Length: 468
Ligand code: GLU
Image 1 (cartoon, protein in one colour):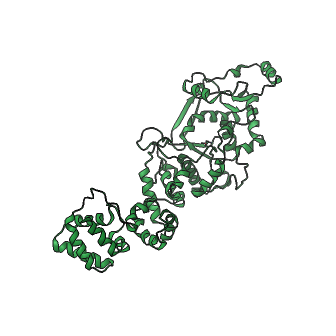
Image 2 (cartoon, protein in one colour):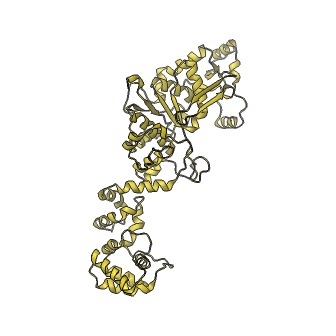
Image 3 (cartoon, helix red, strand yellow):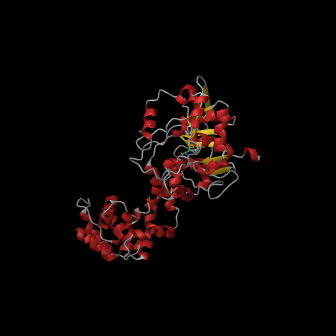
């Protein structure tokens, strides 16, 4: 591929709070699309709406993306040929103003002197939209002159034509969408303070940064006709544009909502989910490989990535899948690594050596680090037996006899118990479930014999006796 055809993608978050799980997905797809074809992945901070900015979130975006291994080739902190990569710092380059003025000169934009609208006004206008044209587009040159002389500072709006259509074919959805321009706003491009709006900045920056593929959330699709008109009027080539499907609530009803779900990547990390698992989880929300492989490291994903794998239907946010994936990645960790994460969860009285002994036993059954406590609590202290433990007490005297005379190693314990079940013709699953419940007070445990060995013979016999 020659340098003019290098794939260049970008992730362009606004620093308005923690990184949304959907944002992580967008970033990961853009990263994979670039890296799969030896292209470049660019990070750009879109902070032109400074009222919405949340202090500290820019730095948080950097560290969260890095926690997932999504390093950028160009962008803040790493530089690149097309910087600065933070929009507020790009204002002084003058490109936004130049673009807006070009549109003005060519009759594709107009000065607007209206008072900026409040959030509520914008919201209610959107809901009951019938008027797409701004009154200032009809101001005469004399009226404009008079306002400017009187010290009014104008904004610049797009002069959206009537009676035309504008289309694009979505890179992700594979679908062509056409809008009638009559229902496309006279969108604000440059605010009266000289800051661009998203609509102008995105076109200017994607052009100047030579972005070849724009991937973004579905929410942005209604803005696309505005961008297409700006590209057209500035005579600029339009990159591939792809909108990712909406992630749905676990019940499949409605878009994933903050109210009932955790949508913050930082929160999932703080809850002890592994970055590999969270990333793997989001990769599969809207993309699938041909062979249905479902466990990926980031580099395996980059290698396999194929835009044909984008799915057209909206994926459901199935948290059970995240737990499963987390368990899979936990199993790949060494016992020492797990120990370093779980040691602080245990009662400080418990010796480190004892915790180390239970890790290999619990590992197979853990979905999260914290699971080790519920899985192994019975090893460190006598369980609180529920009133309805549901054991067959008839087995207990035999079990006590058999274990009292057995040596305390795996082979001896298992041999004596097996001989007992054979000699008495006991139902094995019933018998061993009774033993498990009597030892642990719960049905799900790490391997039982190994657990009993760590607990110790005296304690086991005493637990059994207490239940007779
Ligand atoms: N700044 C937008 C956001 O935070 C990104 C829009 C885009 O990628 O074009 O979602």
